[in-house]
Amino acid sequence: MKIGIFGGGALGLLFAGYLGRLFDVTLIVRRDSQVSSLLTNGVTIHRDGSTINTKVKAVKQIEAKPEYDLGIVAVKEYDLASLENILLKFHPDRPLLFVQNGIAHVEWVKTLPHRHLIAGSVEHGSMRENDDTVHHLGEAGTNIALIRGNWGVVEEVVSQSAHSFPFSIQPDFEKMLLTKLFINVLINPLTALTGVVNGRVVENPYLHQVQKDLFRELHLLFPHMEGVISFDKVVEICRNTYQNRSSMLKDIESGRRTEIEAILGVLLDKAEKEHHFVPSMNLLYRLVKGIETEGLGG
Image 1 (tube, rainbow, N blue to C red):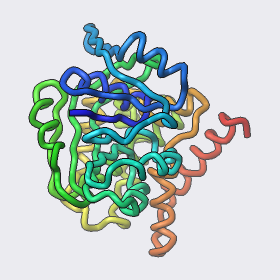
Image 2: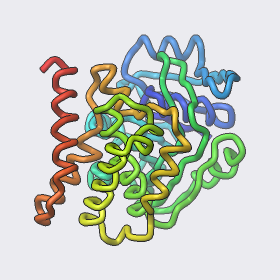
Image 3: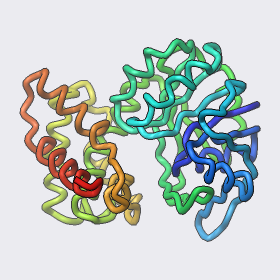
């Protein structure tokens, strides 16, 4: 099976490094320099003191040919639009799997002509070291659910990767993505603003109280999520990923654009339309945007 993975960031490298041991994988990236590194060195994964190296193919986005049996789109939400022309060349009968944070991308994904669209929610912790090396910080899994269509070749991927890189099929893509969104809202902005690792958020009583406030505001927007994810579950995740540094914190430290629009911006739009009062979300959004703007040069 041929798999094309769009995006050479931490997630793209992680997926390529594991799936490339089982399938014919091509990483589709932006820069010539990353193509060269990947073709020369393959993908290296560091995990628990051990190292895995996988040979993969690599091409630039503008040179990608729509010849894959499965496409995995692992770019950030704000980069999806730049891939539209490439994705439109992808055969409409071939499935596409999207693994972005948040829910802002779903309506855009639905506008694509492809018959088989899949949402993914990644629980692994990962950090890219360079163009071909990634650290696997928290071994977990990837939840997937159909947006429309059927699974097709994805069932083969799920079956063959069960022991090395597990996928879990979920019945409801909206609840799956919202569950991950609740977790992101309660962790990412707070760690980005304070510079602490995940576990410290629940140990610091002031940050922990903000988490509780955010959880209440989320339930104002999504009352049907009552009972789907509990606050205790978020606390457990913080403790299980104690030393992890959130992706938003790493973006702030590197002066990169964050995913705050996909995580909080879309929620503030919903709150405004529905006339909900969400002061904690508003404040965190403005603070992150302020720091992000400074990091991007004002």
